[in-house]
Image (cartoon, rainbow, N blue to C red; front, side, top):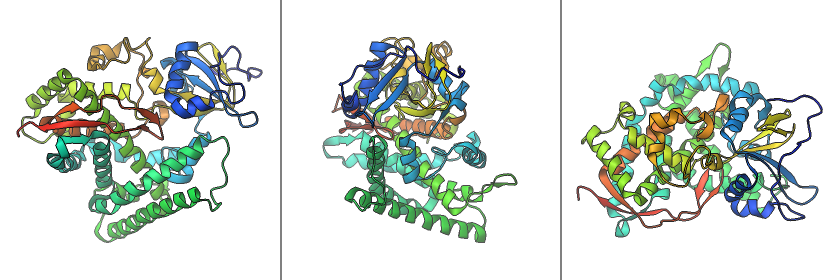
Length: 461
């Protein structure tokens, strides 16, 4: 709950011990996810972490309970904004789209975009997902020694799927550019977003110039396709790809997107729409590769429900165990492992006061492993997500898509794409893990710090 004037000093918030001059700076840089886990284990559900030298020191107020996450994201979300340096760096690189915009900008964008993400509309993209999955998986027959890196392959699949849905026939023109430019830009965002001080972007340093060149190339291809699509829509009527629908979105109250706003939405959809789904798919496959009994159970369900036909949107409800597998993978490896906010009012959370102006950290990575909600939390167990098990669990014990008024607008699309892709892949190939321990770190999304290789065997071969 919000607290009154005079409560702007955190009282009784336990602090994680760090080095005398720089606090937990080096621990956060080398292993932020492990640092947050240790903070909860040692000090509980609200912990203060300091990082950086005097004068440049950051104080992070970490909230690890499901109840605290619900306060920050939903019941008291007005007290918490996306005003931290990290979100500003994302805005400066990927635009002021739905992920980063705030206040009236966000509400207007959400109203214009919402009709394009209804369940019925999203279900219409199932065919495109199936086609891209079939194309990617077909290439595995020629994999050297039958080994594929599922992290790399699922990133490629998810990018092609979202680009096809966004751009239609222009998918080939965008995939290569995104593949080349996104890594440069995301590394730049991460380096600046977590640095205590940054030089201006306009200074001609090698890093600034590399990032500017990547952004120029990415913006140019988006602007070119947007211009062509708007011209085609005027001449021939609207098409069905998402970009055309975005360009045509309008209302009497909110107007329509101009070219710059369209580009911002496209860039955010490309960023959030492929990296998050790729993460979920990668770890679902790798976990199944390490757990053959669960892999066989999922495959039996797929075979019984689908036979030889191509999966459709309606099959999501007919594949409950496969959905449980996916949810458990998203519990253990949430694509957004850390969520940041800025407190604009002092707020009581878990018996502690988080002061106005504080940088607040939610960590699905930690909450999804909280022993109060998840017995034996590191164990892979899809049975955690039966309907019976879910109904007795706090709403925000599992929140891979965020929550509240800023919940991810694309969560149904992500689940649709993931279930269809998993069904097609597992029906075709058997998986065995080659790399059994996959190091990860928190980037803009969760990322692997090494290969996630599996040996695949075609089942009808």
